[in-house]
Image 1 (tube, rainbow, N blue to C red):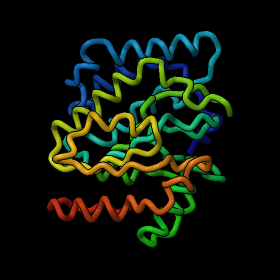
Image 2: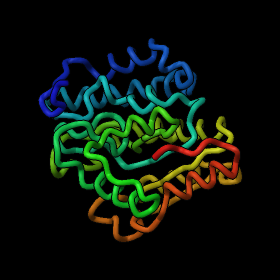
Image 3: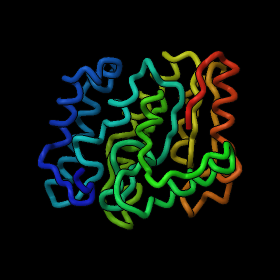
Image 4: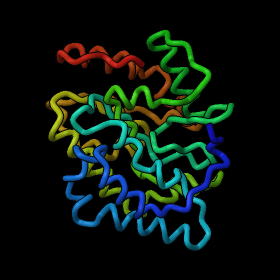
Amino acid sequence: MNDPITMTSTMTYRAALDAFLASPASASWRDLSVFRDGTVARACAAVDAERAIGQVVAPMPERFLAALTLTPLDDVRVVILGQDPYPTRGHANGLAFSYVGPPPLPRSLVNIYKERAEDISFAAPADGDLSGWAKQGVLLLNTALTVREGATQAGSHLKLGWRAVTDAILAAVSQRRPHVVFMLWGLPAQAKRGLIDESRHLVIASAHPSPLSARRGFFGSKPFSQANDWLKAKGEQPVAW
């Protein structure tokens, strides 16, 4: 397997978007208005413009829509909403909080594993790959789908056009799915709460699992047991966290 830290891509984000829309994986998502009216294409163009002036952007173009690729709209049972991809070089892979690479794990993911261990007594694995959650219907989405790489670049693409995209994705999940758990981690994620029909869905809002905020309400929030208890009460299958 290639080391994600050393992998680079010459593909543009616009070309990656076109490839996604042409693939069977986009079948349940491509009818959203943001894919048809140019909203996503404009965000991709803005990201490509940043790369053109020398900015390094994460995740790679081939991975920035991985959350939608691995979790079709018709399968969504849980949404975990973070802020933006990991800005540390090689960490982001298109799935919020997921990490595939050598140790150490990103600190936010370490805290997620700590809370899971306290909540449902599930020991932390050695790797950070959360694609197994995605394949069970857990949409691992960030409020921005890209970020500049760099220690001080967190949030650098939050105003680059992604807001309308992720709003549309969340609204579609709320409108089209019968019973979904929305885990809103951090203030940017909680700002999306108005898009969710809480008469049909469960919202679990807490602090972000970042080391800067985890002790202000993420630890002890028990999101994993809450989600599974609610899904089972609605006749849905629990998630194998």
